[in-house]
Amino acid sequence: MKLFLLRIFTWWSGFTFGTQLWTWRFGELVGTDETGNRYFRTKGGKIDPTLGFERRWVLYNGYAEATRVPPAWHGWLHHIVDVPPTEETYQPREWEKPHHPNLTGTPYAYRPSGSTLAAGRRPKATGDYQAWTPGS
Image (cartoon, rainbow, N blue to C red):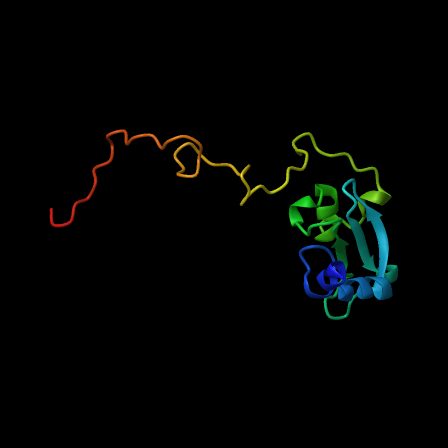
């Protein structure tokens, strides 16, 4: 029952029934990535008259987080390249890094040394700062 209600009322925990129905009716599967995300486009690559180009979308495997889309699929989703990675031999560039999830808001988020949320104590002022006092 919980999964049923999540599919009706939320989009962040996966695709909704509306998206599932739209995909079934108008979409064609183009491919899947290594994390299980599935990529779709309008059937036959039909041009959407409202947009002037074909629609492309992703159904996330689990939590909907845009940073989980690999660079090759990102280029295809945003119409940077016309050919999906499944139809070409895509080789990642040497400067492309493997995916790391967005850790903001978790205990593993980056906290610089001066942050009040960082482990330990905040270092004392170095002397280049003079505190303002009202009336002086």
